[in-house]
Image 1 (cartoon, rainbow, N blue to C red):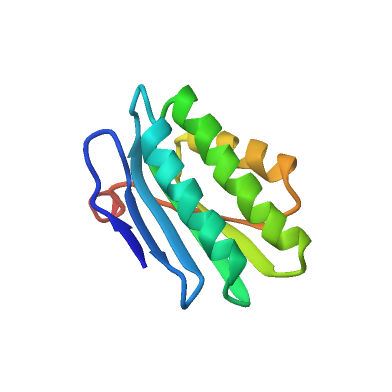
Image 2: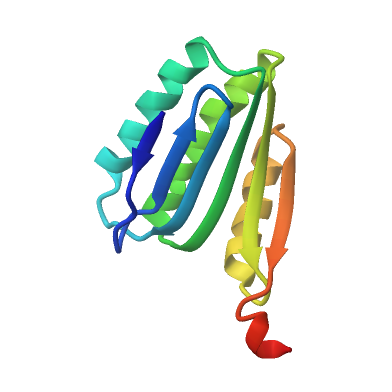
Length: 130
């Protein structure tokens, strides 16, 4: 297990190695995200030595800046290495309708790797729109 509480600049990280369920949920807005993402990268390196048969990474971003997006892509590349070694890996990309930026970023990542992406649209303030 790897767990980090969210902050104003970093997302919640909840990785369960036994189940192969990885979650990144929140804002990636740190101007110097190296140490934050290096910890995640290190965990994935260790996980990759003995991964679950199926790995699902769910990414639900509030906001993300350019420097964090590069590190996030590196994490996806690490999982692609698992995928290329015949392990089942997929990415669930959650985005809010009307927020083209996060959707477009997910589409860009999808085109850069062979891991299957599933795009999940959520409706912001759904209850208030009824």
